[in-house]
Length: 302
Ligand SMILES: O=C(O)CCC(=O)C(=O)O
Image (tube, rainbow, N blue to C red):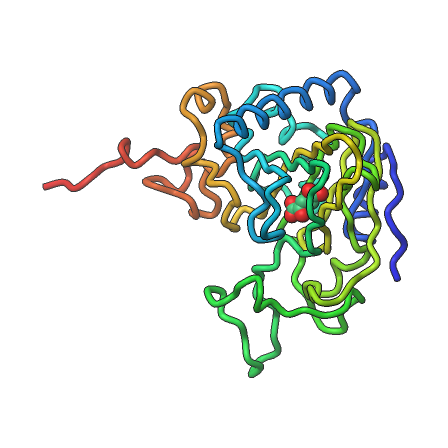
């Protein structure tokens, strides 16, 4: 059994915990005032979306949970929120796990409310076909579904496994406690090469921390939100990163509002997927800083 990660304010120690335990807890990243302002913005947005029936629950992972709320595509929903993906701590962790080139895969809020359901444990990069030896039956990429992924125990694999393709960074905008549904993670499960069997229970570390902290996990680490038995919401905001050749969770190019795009520089647009990587993602020029939209490219000529 791998030891759990301990809270630290030292980014280098957090990176070491990501390698060893598959997750880290980084404290004192946001000031209390900044965490307050972000929480107020997220809760205001969440309430307004729910009041207009524009809200979303947890897809796939906790069918039937109509209590919790995920607020999607926060890139369009507040200037202060847009600072989080490029915060030096987030970029340091993302570069450590994914390398210099990486994309913002999504920017969402995960709000657990009292009376919710506990989410089942899962790994974020469940969709990665497992490596096989030559001649062994392989799983074709397009045939993978959540219910057909290989499952097993959280112990280190004895055969080669795939590296991390995702880094999920959850910003605690309220205190995270065992009572309010703090994220549960299984230490060391990132090295198992499998997903958890939903019919088996596993010991997990429910990560507590004060507002303004980060809990971040490798895409292979088993995790889930907890049950909220408190009397208030748990507000988490995720900056979810992926490798440059991976499909993003939120379509960063199509989903960006044009008024927000006008405020962002080329570097930020690259993080959202506008810049081709090794030609992938190009439209008319594989070497450009920002790929041209279809309407701005050459069409049928005669
Ligand atoms: O909200 C949480 O604590 C966990 C979220 C989660 O499981 C996910 O983002 O995949």
